Amino acid sequence: MFSKRLLTIFCLILFALINIILLSVSAKRGHTNSLADKIILAAIAPFQGGVTASVDFCEHVWDHYFWLLSTRQEYDRLRQRLERVEAERSRYVETRHTCQRLRRLLGMKEDLTHSSLAAQVVGVDPSGWFHSILIDVGTREGVSKGMPVVVPRGIVGRVVKPSFAHSKVMLMIDRSSAIDALVQRTRARGIVEGKTAEYCLFKYALRKDPIQVGDVVISSGLDGVFPKGLRIGSVKKVAKSPAGIFQSVDIEPFVDFAKLEEVLVITEYDGESGEG
Amino acid sequence: MKVASVYIVLGMAVVVLRTTLLGLPFFHNAVYDLLIPLVVFVRLRLPVKEGVFIVLFMGYVMDLVSGGQFGLYMTTYLWVFIGVKLISNYFSVQENFSLSVLLVVCVLFENLLFLVFSLGVGDGAFLAARMVGPLLWQVALAALTGPFILSILANVHYRLQGG
Image 1: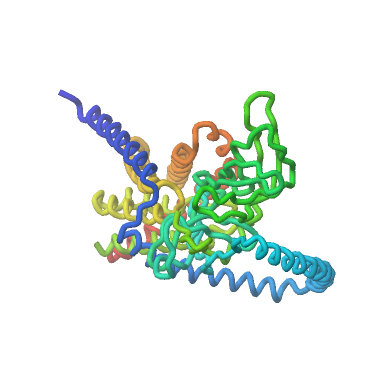
Image 2: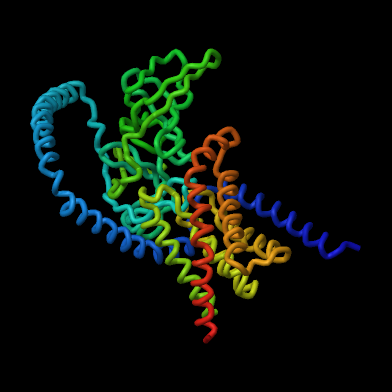
């Protein structure tokens, strides 16, 4: 009844439709974690770790031995900077003591009690379209899905797929990432969504909220994933269209995602598990 | 099975390379997916059953290490696998030039699929525009190095067959 050619085309179309349906289901289910996944990750990750360590070693040799020419200038500059920072630090210590006394007076609980785990980045995402990293801690060390990952400069992302000794972390610059956030100065609320490697969007900030370029954006703690007060980035651009109730705000992350080497996984905060 | 395991080990080495060295900021996503020449080669030289197994396994591994939705790499490699067969039915894919064109088409197809599945409808043009630079590099590298990689794979295959 049908020619072979027609049957082939029909089969291909049917296959494409099934493929699209399966991908849609997979997108809704998110990242699963089967035994096979864990075994394959465990097989690849040590090699990734080895190559990454070799690259780091080469970079270290380059930075410490071949670039000594500019080191002296850098040293002088850093020394001046250190003196300034020392002065600033002594003011900060004084303020902190005052703050602690006031806290005690008010009977408030210390809120910066994150329990964290240090990890090394062993691999990055193979495609330029998505943003994730692989770190060398997993369920063995107590890491679970949803735990926040940070560096001293700010938020890195969250764990999406923990395996026995390694975990996959979705970076905050990935387009699937969303963080409930606040503008530190004005307390204007919004959602930080990944856009590109260079900047994120601060969405749903009301037009009436006064937001300026340079304002610092921090996590609000309301999403149940990231503790309150973690630094995200600074406002890079603000645009208010004539219509609409929201303003368009671009944020430059504090973290340099191209140079991530070590990160911290927050395993517990405020006495609760970091699991989201 | 011996042949399949050799290609899987080769593929795993490519995955490690892709997620470490080639992931360095220095490369700016300019290096194309080096598993594509492997998929093309496997389709042209190996039996279908063995080829499908290798391709799906490598897609599975890539999906595991990628931040995209699960199944995207498996889908890409499977359709490249099917597409190579369809193209080779109509055009000769023996010379370097035709192999270059074939690899360029596959690299473009992969990026197009990622664009479609990784984006919301509104931002498609924006991200596609940002990826134009790296994509041009990928296409150029695929055209230049693709046939060379395929000839290395052919050499490996020849030795595996006891040649």
